[in-house]
Length: 183
Image 1 (tube, rainbow, N blue to C red):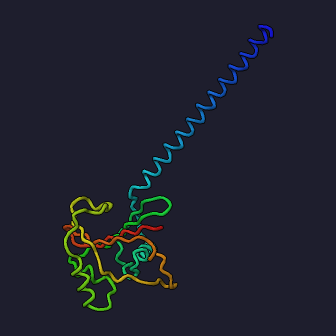
Image 2 (image 1 turned 45 degrees about the vertical axis):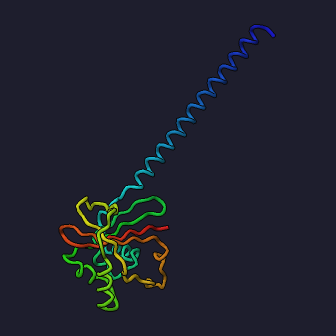
Image 3 (image 1 turned 60 degrees about the vertical axis):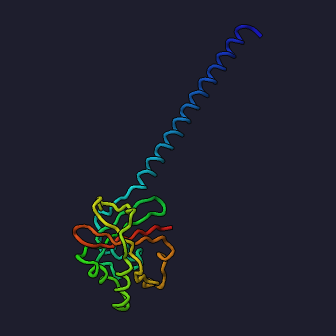
C-alpha cells in the first residue's frame, strides 16, 4: 500500500472518529438534559400547588374525594401535588369552636357527633405538611367521621384512595383538613 493510500485511509479514519466523538457528545448532552428536565418536573410536582379559584363544581368534587359530599358548601381551598396520581389537600372554612366545625358533618345522631368530637384527643406531635398553613397551628387526628358509602351514581371510587383526616386549630378557630391520595 502506498503512502498516499495510507494517508487517505488515516484521514477517513480520523473523520469517522471525529464524527463518532461528536455523536457521543451530542447524545450524552441530550441524555443529561432530559434527566435534568425530568428531575425538575418531578421536584416541582412534589410541591403543593394551590388551586387559586375554587369553583362550586370544584367544591363538589373535593367534598366527594373526601367522601363527605355534604360539606361541599364549606370547602374553602385545596392544593394538589403529584403528577400521575395526585394528592389533594382539601380544607374547610374556619369555625370558632370544635362543636360548630363538627356540626357541618352529616351524623345520624347527636350522640355520634359528640363521640366524634370526643375522639379528637391530644395534639399530634408531628404536624402534617399543610400548604399555606404557616407554622402556628395545632393538629389533631379526626376520627369517627361519617363518610359516605356511595355517590349519586351508587359508586365510591374515593373509597379506594388513601385518606388522612385532621382538625387544625389556629388562632382564628378550627377547620378540617383532608388529605386524599389518589391511586
